[in-house]
Length: 210
Image 1 (cartoon, rainbow, N blue to C red):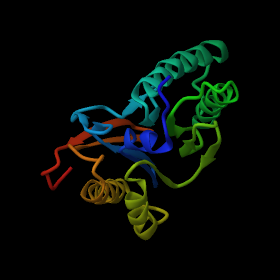
Image 2: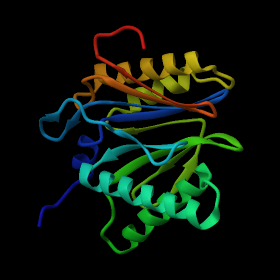
Image 3: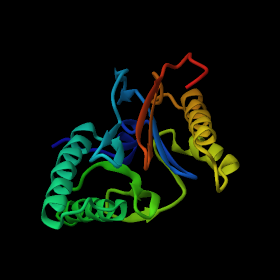
Image 4: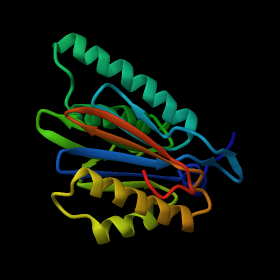
């Protein structure tokens, strides 16, 4: 049996973050997948679960992608059964239940997740850990470069940021993680979700503007 340590989990995690701004949320992540060496330089770590809710993944890729598939199906089923789209809180709680159930059975997902989106109550961000614990905040980070990115967010985030300020801050935080963390790099993904819809931007490492 292959034994995975917490260090192994973090090494596959790279860096993802999310920021709440005045009219929505932004989820951002780098593009590198790595373990003891760089495996892939153009991997999507942010996935839309429906039209208004996205998820950033960190941890074992197979576990994370399995959760993406499960959540997409569950949210479609929720909408079919209830006649309305699920709120961001509902999606995050469902993720927590799935992770907690696997954790209790000792077959837990080696992942850290950010679930974020916009609903009738505004923008929301939730962090879900491997045990299924769910917490909400105005900004959050996951992965091996998270401490570097978090230092920038703690220093610069403020209530009422507009979209442009939030994108700039997310980029600065990711660039700091890329410069300090071996397992973070190879470009950046930005998913910007507002009531007006979704914007997806990809930034190469050497580019200076989103």
